[in-house]
Image: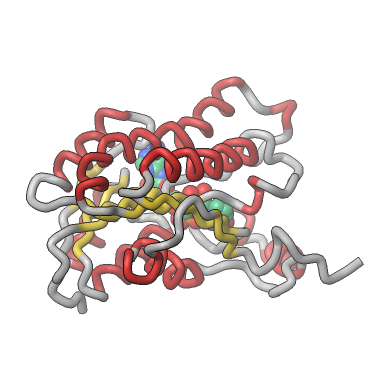
Length: 249
Ligand SMILES: NC(=O)c1ccc[n+]([C@@H]2O[C@H](COP(=O)([O-])OP(=O)(O)OC[C@H]3O[C@@H](n4cnc5c(N)ncnc54)[C@H](OP(=O)(O)O)[C@@H]3O)[C@@H](O)[C@H]2O)c1
């Protein structure tokens, strides 16, 4: 059951039908924060919007016009003081199978599109001392085989986070969370293979895969000026130690 919203401003969640985006949207709504949902799956988006009584806009991250429409609709009645970009992809292919288009689309979805979203919302974010939350990956800083398209795109998300955090300071804070493999739709092709999933889980110092719920508390902290008000330009791992810890060998 959502609490009535109190703040007079709202958080836009791009990728609201995804595992992590949905978890953040539901958590914020249940804690009295107004949210505007954006996703490309109209039916799933409407179902979530009905569940938490939130407005929504269907969009395609590869179409800047549709990103602009999300922000125009979201800001039509009250300012946007939070923007979450929980859209992403995991394109895992060996270099020999990667085309120019694979690289460019991956970069567009993960880097250009969130930059365009922040650009469209920047007036509203500045006037309301807003907070932006992006998603990187453990693959931004660790080398993994078959990650030649997504690894550099997520490294660029980290560069984008720091660049925008500097450019928009002190009015807007910009941070990113870097997950390791988590059980959501995009990773299903890996996590549904129980042998593979068990092996990857065991490679973490905290030996399991991530769940959407693992990202909720930190997301809320970073979005809220009361709790995250002196944090900007930070890349925070939520990765079971995968990016920094080695417990075997
Ligand atoms: N899960 C992991 O293992 C993992 C690891 C590292 C980083 N991350 C990052 O964490 C963030 C959240 O991902 P997740 O784990 O929650 O995955 P998810 O459940 O697959 O969510 C990704 C979302 O992106 C949306 N999306 C993809 N292409 C789009 C497009 N062209 N236009 C509009 N929406 C589009 C998907 O829409 P649909 O619902 O229509 O498919 C989905 O809602 C992403 O940035 C991801 O790269 C995840």
